Image (cartoon, rainbow over all chains, first blue to last red; front, side):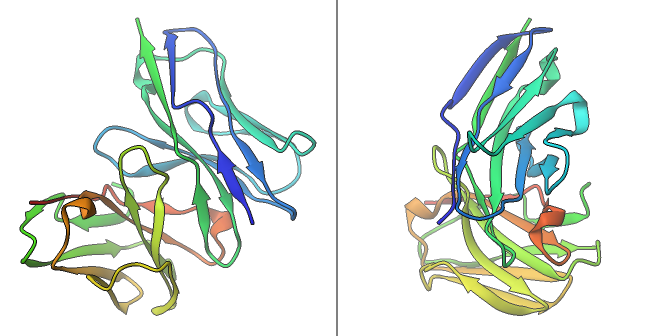
Amino acid sequence: AQSVTQLDSQVPVFEEAPVELRCNYSSSVSVYLFWYVQYPNQGLQLLLKYLSGSTLVKGINGFEAEFNKSQTSFHLRKPSVHISDTAEYFCAVDLGFQKLVFGTGTRLLVSP
Amino acid sequence: ETGVTQTPRHLVMGMTNKKSLKCEQHLGHNAMYWYKQSAKKPLELMFVYSLEERVENNSVPSRFSPECPNSSHLFLHLHTLQPEDSALYLCASSQGDSNYGYTFGSGTRLTVV
């Protein structure tokens, strides 16, 4: 079975500071990993994904994530956040057969 | 706009009502999904349709009834719901395997009173 764990339910950070949102997965097979962002009153938007190849994946809005197989992690990072980055962030793993399993989400709160 | 449109955006219904949620995608995708998003819970996959055939039903109560008349449209018919069914219902679509990523609609905020 595969699952996704996002340990931090909320991460407060000041504007222009760096941020890391943690994601760990459990899987015994090759995985495809995703990060989605949800702004208030909207659906989920794909930020980035890891399928294969380079372990450092760059996404939209200046975000990047690093796939670490030995630590079964896929943490999301941004070197300098903006107020507009305030949103809910979801990590997800592909179960195959057209099924994505999502974590419980991390709320990023950026304050001035 | 993401290319996946959900209507209505908000819905308030009584426990004895019958209503339907609609999802439409103009992306040429061949798979569509219903997810339920409740506070403090992971997104729950409810139904998966691939090439208009249901391929997944995650033990969803029968008071939720999906319909996929063609590859562009997906409905969720609701009847005799309970207050705990209040949530954000998200529709998504994808092309082929999900490793291409899903495209989500903005959701329908459902409140059952």
